[in-house]
Length: 181
Image 1 (cartoon, rainbow, N blue to C red):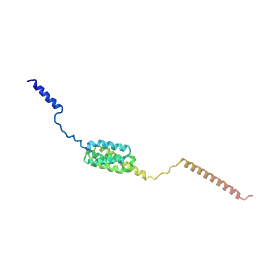
Image 2: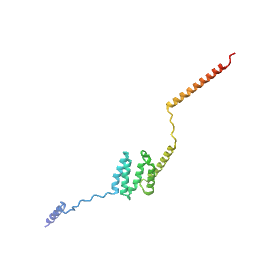
Image 3: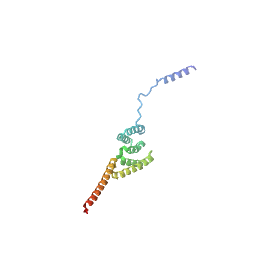
Image 4: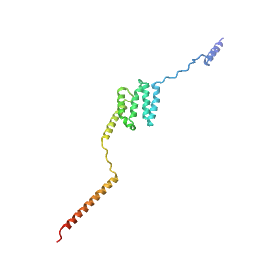
């Protein structure tokens, strides 16, 4: 009788382990997309677009993400990244918009991951905007080309020769105008 218990127990374990027990027939649900799960892919695409000079596409991608997940911590960082992309020197018309976005980021994200960087970038953007305004106010200077200088030097030399020739002519006229004794 002692041998039957281990054999019966072994049979139960074997049957249970072999998959004879009923299982759930419903497939597992795919995980719902969250801001945290989507952010790495959105960020990577935006950076790739920016590196390939497609700033408007990167901006559109980031804006769409922020609209899908408006209350997520990742969405609060979108304003920073959009402002950073607008500071690109290739996009000089967007400096004012970038400053506005950085100010908004600093005001609405008190615990933002990039607060220090946003403050520094805002100050740099303000300085850049001021420099651009100063440069725009300076009238364009005429560049002196080497051939212009040579021509000016030739004109000066010819004027000097003409003055000397006129002076010599005046001297001759005065000498001829004197009566002869």
